[in-house]
Length: 155
Image (cartoon, rainbow, N blue to C red):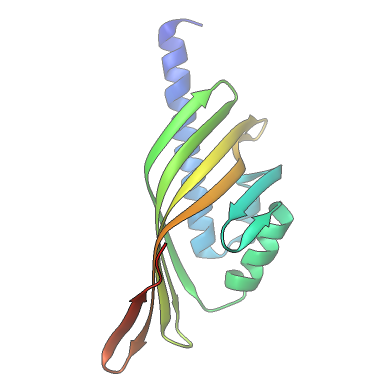
């Protein structure tokens, strides 16, 4: 492979991984469990402190319980990807902005965190084989008649 071919292949891999992460975050917001599952390898490890560490089935179970079967609205926005390609494997750090709102209670959460991901190229394309969330800032609040009551939870 020439230098130009290898550079183009690396850029294509980065682009595929960006699209994969976007599919995952959009699937979370759409509560599309099948699309979430399709973003991961079958042996994936998901580490989301303080919730816990899971295999793929564990993630789907927790997501179904906490989000997919509720009227809660989530918004995931991934930014500032730092992606490194190494053949058929890659790793990345993403900055995530996250907001969630529960219309039943008026409660909301604003979260900032880093995702530390590892990826593997499979016959179906790039998939997430490991992801760890590193919470950086959390604000919890409630919409009340007088406006907004919120507090810094920390990190």
